[in-house]
Image 1: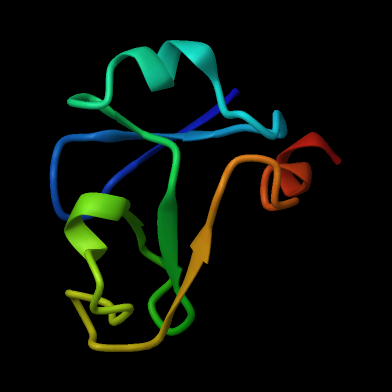
Image 2 (image 1 turned 180 degrees about the horizontal axis):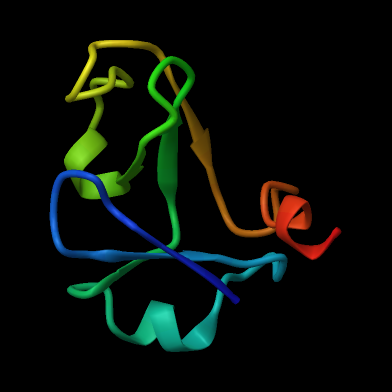
Length: 79
């Protein structure tokens, strides 16, 4: 499991290749996010709570791309 940090809060972001997500992260949603966004402009990471429904980077107002467990984003870290 690759671990990232949210750029707006203290939650960790679990990046998993497993379609259902990492079980440790799923059991502790107060401290872990499995759904997250990456800003296309400033490249910062944000948990699902900090992004909410805005789909806009809270730092630079750029467009963000949402990611979920098993969507292929984690494969970058395995290569």
